[in-house]
Image (cartoon, rainbow, N blue to C red; front, side, top):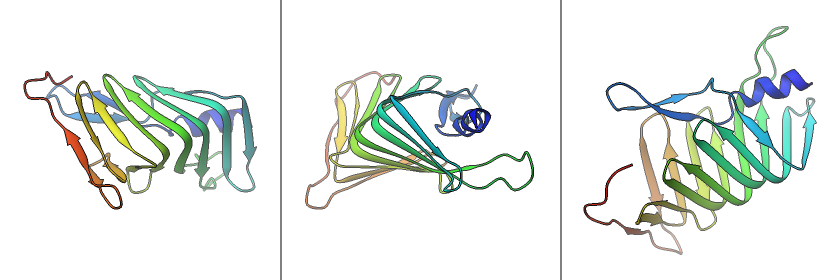
Length: 165
């Protein structure tokens, strides 16, 4: 069971690294470290539930939440790799990476579609720049984001002349 958990966690959180041309590239094979007060692994349901002050790290990406649920597909062959399909973080979610912080009450990483959706007062801050709305969707493969309003309108503040980090 321990090797299964380690193998699954290697795919959980995409890591952004910079290529020689400055473009962002996601490195999915960097080691992932997760700490929590409790882990409930249920192979019959293909789910891992980390709870209690969950902290996940892969390279310079840190994710904090009260609970983190990892859903994975069944192995296709004996000894085959089990692919993660979805990661759900709940409760005081905070995603931190090199000067950028995204917060919300709920986040879903859909590995199949390559996107992260933040809800529950989502907000992204980089230096003095920030954006918030009712839902923030980050498309990892397309290097783009959508901020949606609803009951709460989209709000953004951009400070001219601030250095990009």
